[in-house]
Image (cartoon, rainbow, N blue to C red; front, top):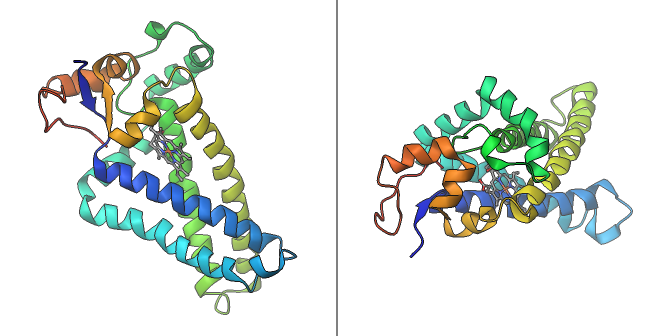
Length: 225
Ligand code: HEM
């Protein structure tokens, strides 16, 4: 039987897919609000209501996750904002790697490689930016000056464009790229093979290997996510 390690706990997977669902609904209903000629679907139709409900899910689910598991969440945020020489080296070598270069020449990575960390950083910054500008437009329209309101609208759009573009790159690398063979599966089952962990996330693998990481042999295997 092939040995596996736990990469994402169930809670983390639920968080991820809840955010995906909310983001997709927000993007769709946001587009209807943006192009207000789209009649019933637009301004005074269901879109605005669904957009607000999904906005609550988009902000509420990560907050709930933080309340349930504050230590892990803060450690994850700290990791996302910590950048060093290893990350620069990895990013410099990444183009060759993604176009088929020799994997063994990449610096060993922790639980998230530097490219994934860059995506997580964009997702956090855009997510927080969308939440703040969205809250201003929803609750403080009459309280803030017209300038602040207009800038909120502008930056809300900027965060959608930046976050949306990077989401396409994320989906391609996470779900389609031939090198990330076990990535999508791991976001459903939580596990990757020990071989995959060793070759893609050498530093993390060494850590979990010290915790009897092999999932089939040790059901309580440790993960960082
Ligand atoms: C259909 C859309 C999406 C798919 C198929 C997808 C797929 C994945 C997969 C497979 C991973 C695991 C990567 C790994 O092997 O470590 C992942 C991680 C992650 N995803 Fe997504 N994702 C989607 C949308 C999103 C969206 C909309 C967000 C945020 C707004 C998001 C945020 C993240 C973050 C922060 C991580 C952890 C960092 C990383 O490993 O890249 N994802 N996603």
